[in-house]
Image (cartoon, rainbow, N blue to C red; front, side, top):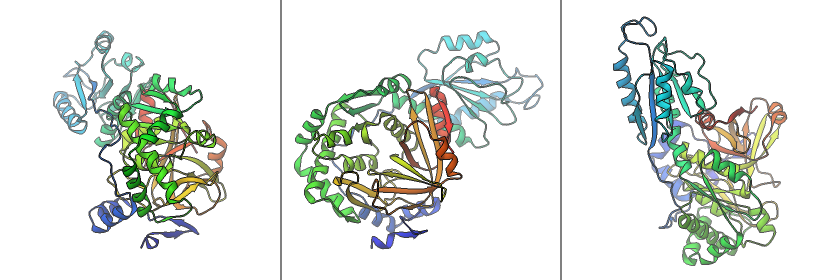
Length: 473
């Protein structure tokens, strides 16, 4: 039955694609329920990984428009008060986790200075441009504080609204406005989050993450991880291991004993997350496992965590970890780290790694097939080969806090490559011009891939953090 769920595209074995309509339809059908039951681990522990508290962000809402009775855009006699009431109500409905604080319409630069002076505790500003001539709001966008500037079409104007931490919205879709404003919500969540970093080498990126995202990075030793592994409940560990084996399309190399170790590693990691109030764990897996300092690879445990809405990140890559956490908060979907490989002959990029989720549309979405394999480089342990959906746009990106840069690109998935070289999961995707991508690649090898076109929300987050945004390819 599972084999029937796998198709072939251009000689490459591919998991089934999901259109938006097909995805919604499948979720309401018995076929989706069957697929979810077969393709995902049926076990969920009573104790879940810690979730970040959803605290309401505080955002100052500033409207800009001329005084009543003055000619200009939109027109003489326009009812600005009614428009402000309408937009405020819509923002509150669309952003329930944000508290909007009203400000008087500034008429002078001194008015803007007074708003800034009183706002030591707000998370940021929404500046809504409703009419021309505009209020003198340049001191707000030049303040170095995060500001989302919204152009109310045919009311406001774009003008010179750029700044160090300014994101611009000019769209006829209110959903685009809401998406940008909701950035303040997950910026607040990131500031309330903790990353556990299991590593025995310096991690200079931890300081930059704390400074720009506000996320705490807590370092753990291999001995602390191993203690959690040893203390993990044996029966629960076996239930996860057996559940993964049943749900897999097939188990190729790993033994039952090896998968059992992975189950214990998952329970140990999950318990550490809960105990420390953390939402993400990164492990220097290759170095620690190669050095005999950990008893099992965390790959299957990362697969479970990422399917469940938490974050498990490979190789103690903190840049990718904070990227995965930002993606999870912004989209409700998991990202996965990869070592991209570019094929200029086919204008393709292949996202290769030994960890990938199977619930790429979120914890409640449909699941794609997977296989349990050994870890590729050393042919030991247990890892995941996820046969990921095709026909979808994916966004691949990475935040580099030490450089204050975010790099990103989109591609369309076309297949899962069957090749016994490099990492087990190999998702192939088409890009417009592979040679340009190859020549312009920067900021390290890893990227984090998420299903969907999320350039705008990730771009907005980068801009509000004061990062340079680089579109790859």
